[in-house]
Amino acid sequence: MKYVTNGLYPEKVFKNFEDISKIPRGSGNEKAISDYIVELAKKNNLFVRQDEHNNVVVKKKATNDSKNTVMLQAHIDMVTEAGEGSNHDFLVDPIELIIEGNKLRANNTTLGADDGIGVAYMMSIIESSDISHPNLELVFTSDEEVGLVGVTKLDFSDLESSYVLNLDSEEEDFILVGCAGAVDSIVSLKKEYKPSIPSNIALEINVKGLTGGHSGMDIDKERGNSNVILGRILNSITYDFDLFSINGGSKRNVIPRKSEAVISVSPDNLENVVKEIQKMSAKIQKEQYPVDPNLKIELRRSAPTSFKVFTEDCKSKIIGLMLLIPNGVISMSTTIENCVETSTNFAVINETPTSIEFLNLTRSSMQSKKDYVTTLIETVAKSFNANVEITPGYPAWEHNANSSLEKLSVEVYNKLFSKKPEVVVMHCGLESGILLSKLKQKAESISIGPNTFNVHSPDEYVEISSVGKMWDYLIEILKNL
Image (tube, rainbow, N blue to C red; front, side, top):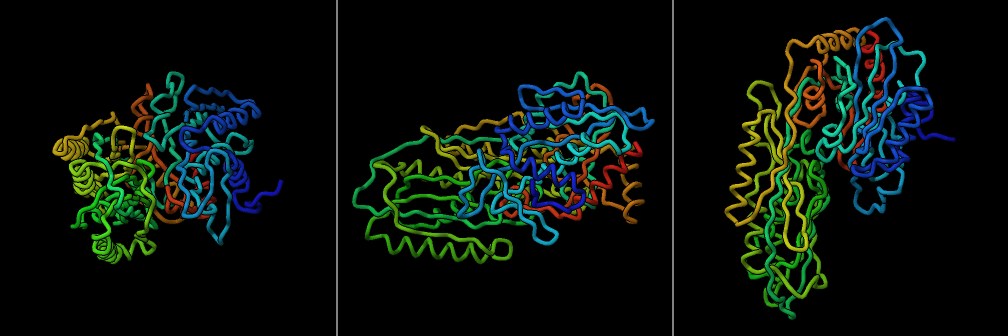
């Protein structure tokens, strides 16, 4: 079989990544990739167990004299985002890999390097016969991208690791030693309708072409949020109009790139409404140009989507919620330079048969600040007579300043690459916090990974040389544990 990645180092890692890229593995669709890993473990005569949630645990005995037990952990699901014009079906189609110099990317879809590279590292260690390592527990978790779900369902009763290496980081010079906790909130507004006016003209407003990205790692980059932008456009219309439908965004942990609404305007007001929309659109495009140069706000005539529209009161509540639901960076850390402490992502607007839902993902390294933002969202919702559902969320991973694993990882990095890495706490959701809280013995954790850019977007790519660099680093850490 011919591989696109033939000749890349480390060859076995890229081969494994290319193999799993052929297996659809979006969140909620992980049975096939889970089974694939189980078969790989069996083929190599290793202990393996799989649960009903598609989590997989593989155990491999030490190849050196170390008495330690070390966990390697990565998640098997990926975010499924396709670019403009793509017909990719993430339920059946493989990810098409493309090499551009030192970049490995996909063809107008997310690549799945988050966390496919971590999975490929672990698969390569399963297959290895020449790597020095302690006793290993290789833990492959499911549904990480939809709220760290799989790891919360995992059976920890037979796991004995005192060190946890999470392989889900995205910058080679960073060693992650802590991360934010998160909580989802869903604001639900009851739909109320009135008959549409047959003589009115339907207009479709499309906000698209935004850069988007990871709602934690990229939230401080001032990238536009299509839901917020659409709310501003609708609010800028001073002439009478009705609202047929509205939706925006796709996933809780993705900064929304596309939103749309269908409105109804009388022929007499059409020209003025179009001018107002175009005027506000031009202002927003000017604001966002440095970070969203491809932003488009398109307006076209449309067939009416229904014989009914939202009542004036319901329409006003929808627009009010879009304007007032908090979004973006709430506060920066006062102890860690250039680190976001608290943020919230106004991620999705979704219509159900009876309501309009506004999905938000709030992150913070402080529980009290996380509670503060959810209170803000609840207060905004109540002012529009909307309901709010708050999920349990997951805890922050707090930094252990006395970690021997952190000390070792810094020493190994310095030895291999002749420079010190940055030890950081990041504004993202990693499974280490849950793993450390559920292991029956005291444990330490770090998170490492290769340079990966534009994750959770169709522009995602991983640096080929960085994959090799982090592989060498991982193997050297294992050798010294």
